[in-house]
Image 1 (spheres, rainbow, N blue to C red):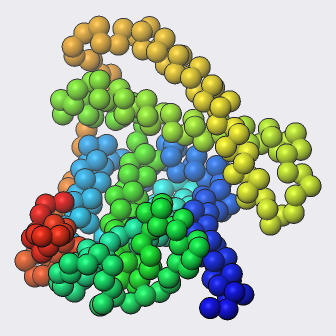
Image 2: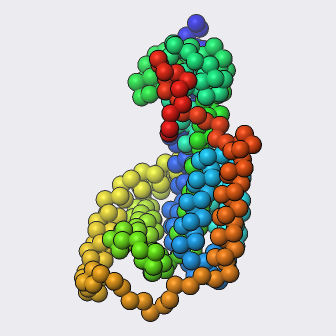
Image 3: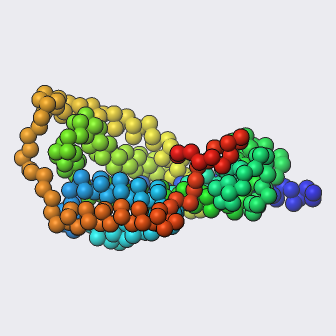
Length: 346
C-alpha cells in the first residue's frame, strides 16, 4: 500500500477515535456548558403540569418509560424520548430547557452509539440481525464494512477492545441501545427539575420506602446541581486569572475541559464541607430519632396525577400489544459459541 495513503488512514482512524471521546465532551462543555448542566439538574419553582404532580407519579412514569423502551422495538423508545422531550416546553424557561435537553440527548445518543458500535462482536451481530450462527469470531460474511482500522494503529484499537472492522450493522445496533437509554434519562430530568427534595421525602415515605434510602436520594438531588455550581465557579476563577487568555477561540473548549479537570479537587473540597453541614443539620433535627416522621404538608394527588396514571396504564397496554404484534425488542441476547442461537435472559 502507498505509504502516504496508509499514513492518511492511520490519521483518520485516530480522528475517529478522538471523535468518540471528544464529541460528547464538546457538546456538554461547549454547547450546554456547566451553567446549562446546572439548570437541567435543579428544581425551579413553577406552576405547570409537572410541578403539580406528586413525585411518586413521576417516578412511576420514569419506570414505565424505562420498561416500555426496554421491551419494545427501538423506534418506540425514540418516540418516547422525543415525546417526553417535547414536554420540556411546559417547564419554567421551557424553550431553553428544551434546547439543553435536546443537546444532551444528541450527545448521549452519539456517545453511547459509538461506544457500543466499536466493541460488539461480529458473531453477536450476525445472530441478532441475520439469525446466522457463526463459529469464527472474525467472520463478517453478512456484515457491511464501514471502516477497517489500519496497521500499525489497529494494534492499539484492538488492545482497547475495538473490533478490527467497524460495520454498518454495529452502528445500527449501537443506535438501538442508545435510543433506549435516552428515553428514561429524559424522564429522570423531568423528575429532578420539577420536584423538591422535601416533596420526594414526603411522598416516598408515604409509600413505605426506607428513610435511609430516601435520605440518600434527597442528598443526591441536592448534591448534583451543587457539583456543577462548584465546578462552574472553579472554571470561571481560572479564566479570570488568565488561563487560556491567549489561546485561539477554536481551542476554547479544550481549555474549558482542562480547567474543569483541574477544578475537580477544589470543587470536591467545597462539597465535602457542604456534606459536613448536611450531617450537622441532620443531627440537629434528630434524624432517625424516631421510626416515623410527622408532616406539616400532606401528600395529595391532583388531576395531573390522575391524567398521568392513565397515560402510564396506556403505555403498559401498548407495550403488551406491541410485543403480541411482533414489535417487541429487536435485540435478542443469545449465548455464543457452542450454544449459539440459544436465547438467554439479558
